[in-house]
Length: 117
Length: 325
Image 1 (spheres, rainbow over the protein chains, first blue to last red):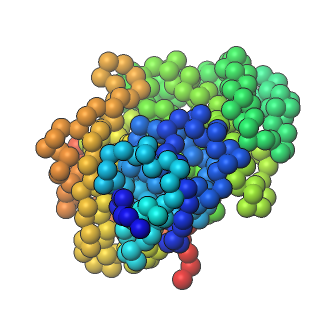
Image 2 (cartoon, each protein chain N blue to C red):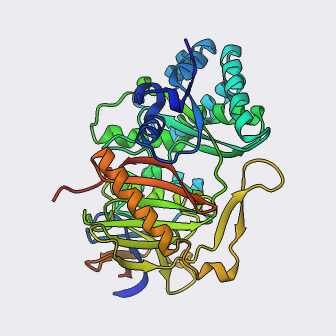
Image 3 (tube, rainbow over the protein chains, first blue to last red):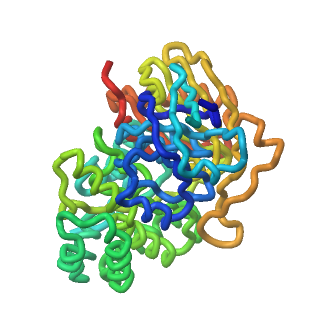
């Protein structure tokens, strides 16, 4: 298990495992429509694409910006989806994470940690 | 039939003013500092839909169980219908009168915010956070009218339609037919600092803590996940600062200096490492948080803005996700 990023855990404190998907455009979201179950979606500020269409199918949401007060955090909490906001990735190449298996872990306080399995 | 109501002359009424509008009226009655303005009530929306004969077409486009794949297309179709239909003249006249009155206080072409207030919003179960839109820094009546229509349209944005689909999955009884949109028009606050204050810690569900996110400029950067804001956690009993994490706050939203709406600018380097709220402001926010929570008898998610050291309350709604321990 390799630690690949750390941020604020802003939603349900369940550990989840899922396929990592980097979502940047509305087309990315559409392509996940029947395909979103069990996925952990990564979005960044450049994307600002709403995950709403697929949110209830996802295992987790990860965002490189934002905090507990952001809409994505609020809606993740409302739908009980584990979330990390403001994640600091240890490498720059987020796209290379696509398709790999990740795990969201909470440290018992407020940190959310993303592992590569 | 009237279509516009002044904050100061109205009673809270979610079905007429939507969740946001109704809560703003409550905040004013409780004596909190809310930017002055008026509300285009849901009668206006209903009249607009009726006079444009949109109801039938909306119905046709969105049958009770619309398919996720069709949402973007449906949303665009409804948007086009709304854009084509004019706002009834009697509504325009009433808005114009109120706008002129407000301008007498604040000056011609002073800027206004135009904010959605749906009647689904801000209940204890679903906040509808981020699903409908707001439009800042409107300088003319024409811009205000365009933004009002765009607020109505955002009730049928792809995001909103998907959100409704998800609500239906949780079996909360809900019908699109009952949805109405009020619109709040307020004097625009050109914030030096903005943020949200939760009167419970939403990260760990601790009711004895408060959580604040704050950043430079207008608050849309925090709501829309555009930046990493500052995070402060306070002990609710004694104001002790339990945690302070400075966020990068790389960008700042400001009123467009060359016209209307807002633009994003890079935050100056020296301000990125500086906390966007100082201790005195935090203490004021803390006191306001306690007072507002007490008046609403429930932990609150409060939007605030500070301009020239004056704190304005822009919204307060119940925290929808506290787990009762």
